[in-house]
Image 1 (cartoon, rainbow, N blue to C red):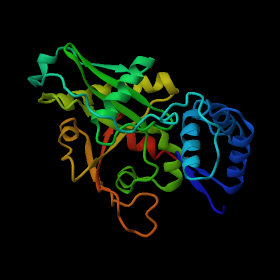
Image 2 (image 1 turned 45 degrees about the vertical axis):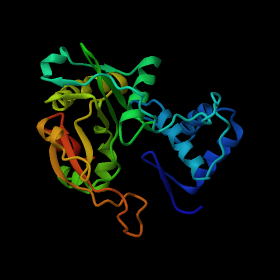
Image 3 (image 1 turned 60 degrees about the vertical axis):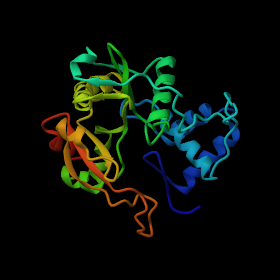
Length: 290
């Protein structure tokens, strides 16, 4: 292999891939390999902790690409240890919940921390979100949206896109500054309101609650506060009405290429790019001299 390969926001040189392959061949578990990769390659978060989840996802993708061979997962099952991306909806959905927002009572974002919450979040997203469930790499926060009448949705925040021309132009980033400050931008990777819930203004209310909550939760989990949120809305599926209503900024559209489109075929969906500042001086923070 020549050149570099990029996985989970990190470039791996040919010599580093040799290190990864050697560790994968010598250690007994996937977790041990991921921890060793972080230690050997200095792959750490801003607070000094290992980027172990990023490493584990990167290793799975390397294995899918035939670059490394991993030991069998310890919790192997009929799906070879993998959680399905999509699940079938239950035969009978709950009764519809139309009506005004106040009929739902208190709106609460419950951080996904327990095993039961994790199973619930995965199941809802795999069943009802058009993108399905895939594990997030790196720093992340997930929430269940609870009300007095039950669960109405789910949210997920994770690492931002490595490159995005409309976002980078809006911020005023060059390549070096983007690399240094990218961790301060967090992506809204999943936003789900259950299909039987038909409540006006609910989506914008959830987005507003999440924006107020996320900085403190991120600080508690990772030791720093993000300053900007981003999301991508497929133009042929959605109009972005909820994000606009929640005061997110529309800054442009993607070209539908993706990082593997070396032939300029534009095979991916075109997406509107929305940003939400968590601090008034977000551009100054994100473009501060290195």
